[in-house]
Image 1 (cartoon, rainbow, N blue to C red):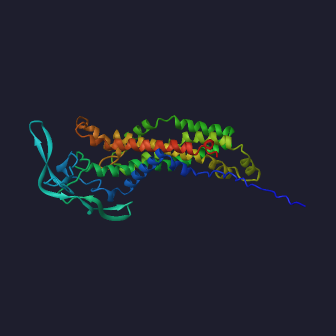
Image 2 (image 1 turned 135 degrees about the horizontal axis):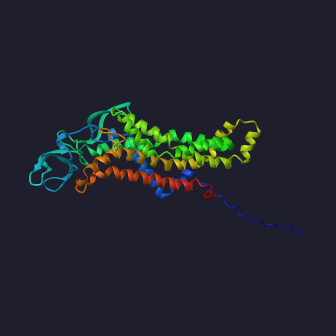
Image 3 (image 1 turned 135 degrees about the vertical axis):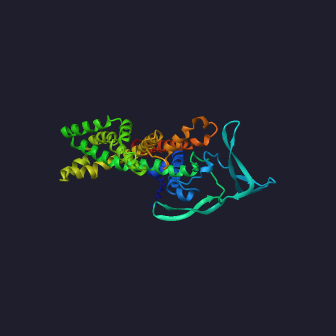
Length: 373
C-alpha cells in the first residue's frame, strides 16, 4: 500500500499595519514639527529670560537712549579672527543734521563673556541667581537690538515681553475652555427648554464686542493700577467673553453624541445625567477641544498685543510685545533707519503662524476619517 505524501505550503499572513499614535503622526509632519520646535524655543526663552539675557527688564542707561545695535567684532587690527568683543560707544550730536549719532571708542576692547555674573534675579519668582548667559564688562554695553528711548536693552525686553504675550493665551484657555465645555455639554445633553435658555445667554455674550468692551473698561480703570493687575484683568475679561463660541460647538457635538448606545446604556444603568456628561460625553469632544485650544491661543495673544499697542494693556516700564511695538511705531519716521525695532511684530507673526500651522495639522491627525488602516 503506497503512502501518499501531502505537501503543505504555508502562506504568510499579511501583517496588519501598525497604527501610529496622534503624536507620532503630528511629529512626522515636517511643517508641524518645525512649528512645535519654534514654539518650544519661544516658551523656553520666555520662561528663562533672566539667565538668557544680559540685562534685566528695567535696566537702563540714559546715555545710550535710542542707540543702534552694538557692533560685535570678530577680527583684530590684523584682520585675524579673534574672540568676539565690543567697544564702548559715545553719543554725539550732529549740528548739521540735528541728529544724535553713536561713535565707537576704540581705545579699549570689551570681550564677550559667557556665564557672566550680573544683576540678581529669581527664576519663576522662586529660584535666585545672578549668572547671565553672556555680557560684557562695564562700562561696555552690548545691545544686540539697540536700545529704546529710555536706554533699555531691546533684546532683553523682547524675552521679558514674551512672558506676558505668550502666557496670556494659556491663562485665558484655563478659564474659558472649562466654562465653555461644561456649559455646552450640559445644554446639549439637557435639550429642550433648558438648551434654548442656555444658548440664548451664550448668544448674548457672543454679541458683546470684546475689543470695545475692553477699551471702555480701560477708560474707567484707576490710573494707578499696576501692569500685573491690568494683565490679570485683561485675561479674565477675555476669558469670560470668549467661552460662548466654544460652548455652541460643544453643544452641537453633544446633541449627536448623547444618542449613542454607550451613553444610553450609562443612563439605563442609573448613572446620574451630570456624571454621564462628564464621564462619557465630554471626553468624546477631546479631539476638537485640543484643536480649538491650539487655534484659540493666537486670539488671546493678538488681543493682548492689540490692547498694549493702543496703550490699554501692559503699561511701561513692564514689557510686552504689544507695547514694544507701539514704542517702535511712535518713532515711525526713524523706522526705516531702525528696522530692528519691529522685532516684536515679527515674533508675534511667527508665534501666530506656528500655532495655526500646528492646529491645522493636528485637526487632520485627530480626524477619525483619516485614521483608517
